[in-house]
Length: 492
Image (tube, rainbow, N blue to C red; front, side, top):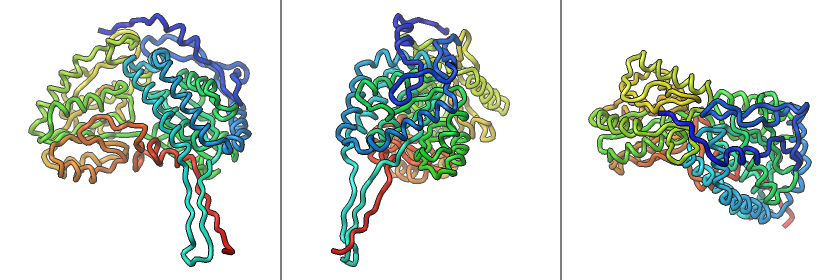
């Protein structure tokens, strides 16, 4: 049964969040005082209105970042790190309010929102420590006649675009290394979830981030505000998380200025369960990989391939867990499944399930929209999903687990790799040799071996093939915001 509970601090946290653009350290209205509505996906009601930037507003933000770049690049690395550290501490202190704000604008239940706030903060703590570890090299030339000096310098003003599904963590994962490396930036959060980013920007201002180092533009027309900045020679870096379709367009636009580009794009994650797997552990991993963020994650398990000998037992156990989840507006701790982000996404999930059923898939549990207000879909398990079903090749981005079977290792690997995407894959087996063989054979940038969650600020996140370029997080995350300069020293 869908519930629509309320939280006593709802109005307070929404009112406290900034609603304007942040340009050159000042909160200001958009041109013409234009705004757009932010919706609560659990009810369809409007939470508030925020500034709707014009192309001129966006270029003003880029100008502020450009003007601040030289001073920020020269800023002591230790102090850059300390700003991030102070911001980290403030995020942790305000976790409850930030989580509630996220739940209201995105829909994820409060326990998950708290987890994301903590995860988001960890990127600031990680890159606070990396700011002072940017290193170079010094070497004697092979012929002995000179010396090589290699330094690392910030690439310059960066354009950052974040998605709606992790509205704070995707921001800190980009802002953290940019600040640590000495890059200024302009960030555009998703239209559906701007409030978390606006609250984060205010925390960074309080932490002492100089004016113009981070600029925030919120807009209903993403392409209209981003393309002029991408084509402007003052921009030197683009980092985007979102769909592969949009990522391809951004690569084309970035070619004109030869921007340094990093893209975290779509996924179609396979989840392999071999006949020797610990079945309970596999089901637990499946719940994590499928139901994190209501299934609205690029890392979500999208295709379940289960050995034929255990497929019935696996699907029964998974369906039992999925059907027991509590659905509702996520502002109370007893809710486990919130709404999808909007009507468009609800329609897509509905269409994908209908297509699979029409092609012969069987519904074990769920299979339809959940009643009541908002954009809720019932957690669903399907078996016998044919390879020709749309959900075998498209991201579901919802609480739907489609299961098909395999009979041997080679078949499982072939099915897993039969996609243009290559972000993450999961496999469960108690055979160490098999685990290593399959891990090496999977065409993905990340693998979860006997676990359903791979994301960690201390590890490199990213994919291959149509799932993107570059890596975020870990020791290599800061590299995306640095250029390498070689100095040849002669006359020795």
